[in-house]
Image (tube, rainbow, N blue to C red; front, side, top):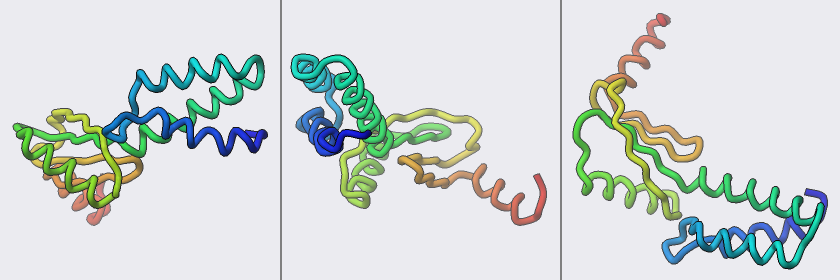
Length: 134
């Protein structure tokens, strides 16, 4: 982004896009875009919208937690995992849950580039790698 003003503005736009729960709020995003359309035009609008979109995508990736599991996973377990990782990372997380029969048993958690594997499949794959087999 060439314009230094946009570099300062975009993080503030992301903050304005968050709801009371500190997660992205689609209604607030729409309001931010509407205001930007009133203020900017042409190439300048396109540039700021592209920078804003990139910042929103980065925010979503960094605040999303995906839990893969095999079998039953209670709501209280999901909430306990969310709470634990929010405290550990110091930020609110939106959670998605997916059942994956590939795990055999256990869970796998994805948060941005962090992957936490606690499954039989993960143990077996690690064992295979240590043995030098595929």
